Each structure stands twice: as C-alpha cells, then as structure tokens.
Length: 448
Image (cartoon, rainbow, N blue to C red; front, top):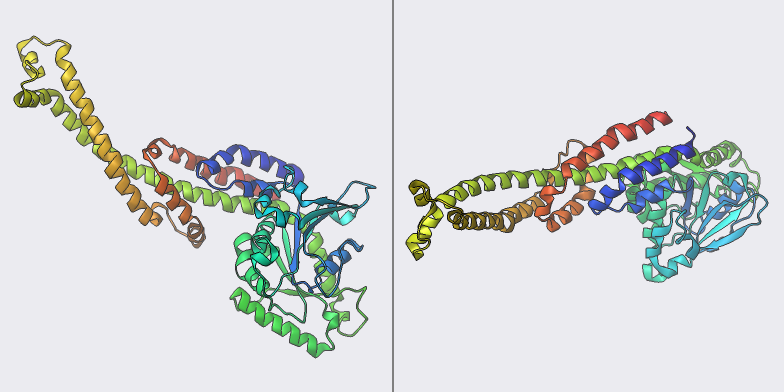
C-alpha cells in the first residue's frame, strides 16, 4: 500500500471510530482531523534576517520569495504545486480557511488580521509535487499580540503541529537572542511538535569575516541554544550559505557537503509523513484513553456506592412495605386494616397493596435523592480533588500526558451527573484500547 492510500485509509478509520469518542469526552478532534488532511509540510521559521526566503528560493531553484536584510514578508505563505503549465498564482487566506479539503479551517479563530496575512502560492515546480513549504514572518525581539494584530505564537504552534519538518534558522549576527525565538524553542515547539521534526540551521555564514568569526558566532549560538532548550546536549546545527550570493572562500569549501545534506534532509520530508501521522494519532488517542480511563474508574466508584445505597434501600423498602402502613395507622389512624393484618386474616385484596406500594416508591425516591444529591456529589468532589487516583500512571510518558489532560478530567468531573453511571465509559475504553493495540499497531507494521 502506498503512503497516500495508507493516509486515506487512516483518515477514514480514525474518523469512523474515534471522532464520536473525542466528541463525547469534549476533546478537540479538529486537530487530529487536520493532521490527516493534505500533503507533507515543511515549515521555515527564524528571525527576519536569518535567510528563510533565500533558502526557499534556492530549494525551489527560482526566486519565489523576496529576500533582504530588512523584513520583506509579514505573512505566513504556503508554497505548493499548481497544475502542469499553470502560471504562478496566489490564493488568499479567506479562501484557505474556508476550504474543507485543506487543514487550515481552525485558523479562522485568529481573526481577520491574521487571515489577511495568510496566503498560498501555487507554482509548477518538481520539488513541490508531494510537499508544501510554509514561509513565516520573521521573529522579532520585542513584540506583542497588539503589534501584530493576532497571536503569532499560537499560529506558529498550530502550523508546527501540522508540519512534518520544521527548519529553524539563525543568522551569525543574531545567534538566537531574539525573544520570539526563545519562546518558540522553550515552549511553543516542544508543546506542539516532536523534537525529531526540528532541524537547526545557521545560515549566511559567508558573511563571517574569517574562521575565527565563524567559530565565535557558532559558539554563541550553541551557548544560547543551551539556555533556550534548558539542556546541556546541543542538537546538530547545520551551517549553510547561498552559493549564488557568496564569494568562494576557504571557509565555505569544506561546508558544501553539509549544505547539500541540509537540502536533502528538507526534500526528504515527505518520507516522514505517515510515520508522523501515526505518532500524532498515537499521542492524541493516548490522551483520549487517559481521560476515558479516569471517567471509567469514576463511574465504577459511583456504581459501587450506588450498589451499597441500593442494598440499604432494599432492606428499608421491605420493612416499609410490610410495616409502613402500621406506623401510619398508629399516627393518623389510617388505613383501617393494614396489609399484614389482611394477610393474617385472609382478607387481603389489591387495595391493601396501594399504600405499601406508595410508601416503597417514596422510600426509593428518598434514597435516590440522597444518593444523587449527597453521595454522588461528595464522590464527584473528592474525585476532582484527587483525580490522579483515577488513572494508573506507571510510566513517565503517562505522567506527562496526565499533566496535560488533568484539567480536562477535572472539568468533566465538575460537570458530571448521575448519567455517568450509564455512559458506557468501560465500553468506550475497550474501543480505544483495541484501536491502539490492534488497528494502530497494524499500520506501524505496514510502514516498517
């Protein structure tokens, strides 16, 4: 099975099996649905002078994006293949966010200001036949949402979540000191994308005056990277330059091979697509499973309490059925003949069962009221306070997922009613586990 067919099959199965469960547990399915749509995506980010547009132009072999030392493009620009023989054309953001075949519908939430800075360029190019490249506005050092008119970091995070490869670029003169770059590396990208999808690039190295200048810039970037990532081990940083703009030098000659490796890495992004889709499905379905597991254990505890309450209610109902009318006769002289007296005297008829039946119904109602108003409510509050006791956190992976999903579980518990007793959480949990252990595993086996 080829990758496109596999992706289509995955999309169909996930939507059929999982979308009702995501809806039931109030989890956002649109994100997973978006990941399954369209084609492989490469996202290029960096500060405004880091060489993003130059890299894209070199990758495509033509000047599709404007370049320069100052900011030249303030839009998120998707570059993808057009029809054979079709001239290069632009599609506005308002069309993109309303096209159900594209994964950008959720970007409507960022408002008209963002949509006006969002566009797609279609062009005939062999590199783009099975992938799309997204150029992004340059990151700045001091900027607020008010300055841009939309939440840049949130948009960046959502696009990064869709991307199969993220190219984060630096220039040797601003080696990672930009505020938005720090935020992206420290929080936005780790939350939205796997570390294996990010490659780091220091471009424009031809602008270094000599080898010492290059080493100094590279060292500064490594030090800043350690501060931004919070880790001592530094990921590989590709060093590159634009051959069309650089003059031959002893510095650049040894790095030509690394530049070629970078280009090959970017062009290989489509081969990561299905594996990344499976990773995203795996993660989000495990999040769903954790929420369902918590609600399953909560409903089981509720059933245990209901069973105990029901046993007491049954005993009380039997006592009330046979002796309740006797108590009433002693208090209000009604009825004239009790059920037990009628049974012993052999004069029993249907009228003798009316009052005991009503008293039993009243007793059951009182017990249900006590259970739903006090017992269930108390359980709900206790479970919300100690929600981690509803799940088995037997690995660091599950602990990390729980930190993300705990608020969602507490929100569901806060809204829980006695309907949770019949919500079928256990059955849903079995469906999710079956999908993870059987269906998803079969797709992993297919791509090995």
